[in-house]
Length: 249
Image (tube, rainbow, N blue to C red; front, side, top):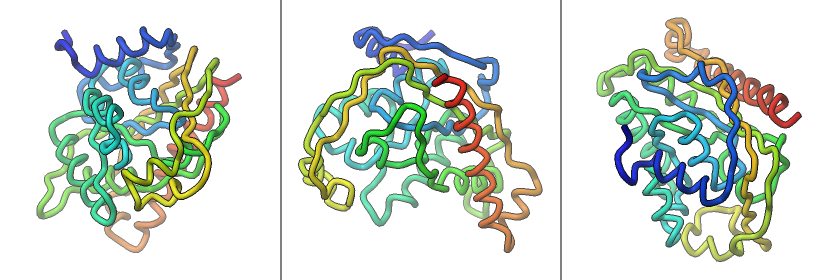
């Protein structure tokens, strides 16, 4: 059973209030007990509650620094169990520390590798930007461990596609206003408005679970580290692209 005001209940209540209908596909691929790193595309503030409701287990999302600074938005992301990233330059190290701690506790961690850009600049439902590689580094560090970090056993990387079938778009706040909360974000230093995408009907397609092999861990310690990181990133992105193609058709 879920606790009152749990992220799952908040997510389901939010989606009921917006009248959003979710259609799940390939849900048998969702691990129920092992630590999971969920990797997904990202276009809307609704993506976190959509994934929590679809996966049916708590997910601790890494979200942009400004979301933890803006009133109202801060309360929403906190209620959903998100952990806002720190301000630069300690952002990446803080992300690794928090995410590793959660994975070691057998929890699910969610990341949006496209970063802030698709949230700030409106994109089409079947569009997807380049993936940042931080999640691949996290998975390799988690599985491999170190002198100071114990390995995360049975880690699963789970690519998930959020495919909008029907949505409504409007404007939220001026981008320059958000620069007051995070001056370090260059995307806020421009005219225009932060788009607000509200899903009416959305398909959530679960990708094939991806695991770090012993060979990958060995490569990460050597000269092929960049190659193995790129391979993991590209494989997950390609899986999501294919799922989006299925969901948006």
